[in-house]
Image: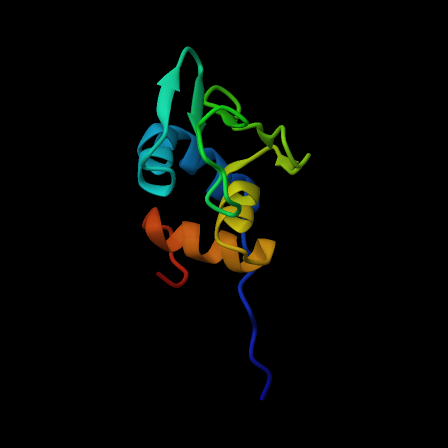
Length: 104
């Protein structure tokens, strides 16, 4: 008997997350603030003292830590980076958070 693992639809998860991106950013980076079309925050993965070097474009979710060079381009990669997860695990958790299935 083989167990079939459902394929994660990264595109669907990312599109759905983009619809609520400001809410996700406020939850994931609560000390951040909206500045134009960007969310500007401290990077929680390092000893970042003041907001500014870690930014997320709220129109397309391109994100970057300008101090370290870490960057990505979608909500799944941002979740993976922020919470130190593999892409698949980040996608599963994000899908669950968005009510799309997966683990919470």
